[in-house]
Length: 194
Image (tube, rainbow, N blue to C red):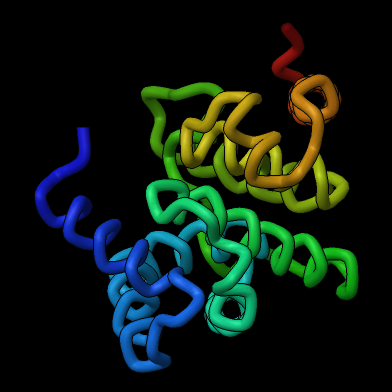
């Protein structure tokens, strides 16, 4: 059920999508729809890209692309998925263009695999997990972030990445397998065998 604010947003956006809608009405609708979501979009981009400055650029570029493609939004109720797809594609393009760099934005808690009573061990595990996620191929990395950070289902990830559900499940499977293998290798090196 949509909140009153969301219903108002959707009504304004529907009228702005109309072919004869004046440019200023389109701009107001676009600003309202994106403005309320930019902070969460930036956080998502930061987790995917692992770089706060690049996340700002990706979010900005996604907003510009969304404005340019405003006519392709058919249903304002699906704005989040539509804009999310544009943002994820922008992040994927950036990951493909650059070499792997260290994370300057810490990964959020939901990606943690294990917890430890000892804070030092927990911090070391979190950093190791961040490095392992960073080394995943772009499509696997995006699937992991969308699934574990945004808690999206495989179907929702497929919609946001323009992929098939089976492809998303495969990416998640291989990503989790790679993360586990990396963790197990680190445990063997440190002598904590399982």
